[in-house]
Image: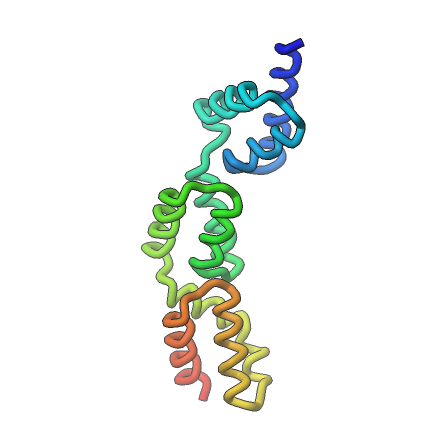
Length: 158
């Protein structure tokens, strides 16, 4: 009976990972929700980690890349990674790599360019500024990056 449950936990974890990537914490939560015993869950996670099927560093990098492509900033990405159960030191490493690849101001500029047509339709300069800063802030960019990008936007779009 115990072997059957372990096999089922193993099969369920394999099924989940065949559909999409999961962090270790997410997979553990899914298996616990199915009421598999914790020692069996721990064994499945150890097996999958050692075989490379479960890799939090790769998961964090992939999630970071997809969120960056969507126009999200470091704060929002860090929050999503924390929600997915990624370790704080791994979050710092991943965001450090991101900052070396695409500096925050450049990412904020790209995000603001997606909003450009809507901003240019706004006739009131104060409202335009508020919308731009709110957009960047809501996407997780720092205030300094948002204001710096806003200045650049104003100089290029008088």
